[in-house]
Image (tube, rainbow, N blue to C red):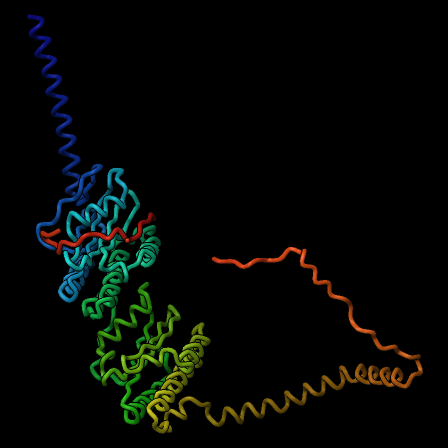
Length: 442
């Protein structure tokens, strides 16, 4: 009897322990579902989504708004190029090496077109503080290991501040823009993600969002812009922005050039002078018909003159923007073999009163300098002259001439320096990874 009671007690204890273990596992799973996170055990791959999606955010790192932007950009990129860029976040890889896991996940899901192998995977393991960009063979020429590494480097600072969502969106935009450029397509959906302002309904030669131009200089540029178009058929626009909020200035300017339909306007005879005020970034972009202007000395000169006025002084920088516009405008006229309009000629020069004012200041300054030289150094000059006179007259003896310099020993035995030298089907397209990419930690 006592044996039966002991057995029943033992079984009851086992049952209680089993229930406790089950409840703990259930609670952990419930918590994981509640937090929207997924842990990966060693060797386990995430299941492929039933439908094509460009973000699988199991670690809850991306806001709903940014996820929507990623989906739009990814869908447009695939529609125009067949390339696919997918973001996957997990809480941890459970000790699995991120490089091997990313490669296996890439191949298992078949990211990118099966024939073109043009997929990209951005994998982030939040709790492991690790991330990797895996690139298919078809895009390794554009998204090199070094380029992928630079994208991850740009994410590190924001990740360390736990600004995950904006950093992931920026990285996605960067990769999508690079892929689009590789295929020669523009992605309109990138504009909203980058914060490109809407094109003004009546766009002239100036869009001064950064409020960097004085009214008189803005008016002068509008006049020069109209005269430039009438004389050469080319269109040149100045756009200033107060801040880019962490977006790369080059990508922003290029996307604005496309979104505002400037790049291919007037048969590609277009130019954009773009200035980001807070970032102190200045650049010229040119349409297909004017690409040689990128290497012109006048273009570089104009950019450097504007940059020299930072830190920002509105009067001076406004004047340099006007002059820079006139300098490049005059060069465009010369290349088109037409006379430079008066407005452009005058826009690149100083007003006449400036020369008069400078002349009036220069005269007394030159006089003062001469006075100082004569009175401060006159006695010394006089004494030296007298001494040379005496020496040349022979009163202080004969000064023998030198017999030549010393000897030079070309010793070949002395030491010298030598010369130096100093890489599936289903909901995705079925692409396979090329093994290229970059990994990192933050």
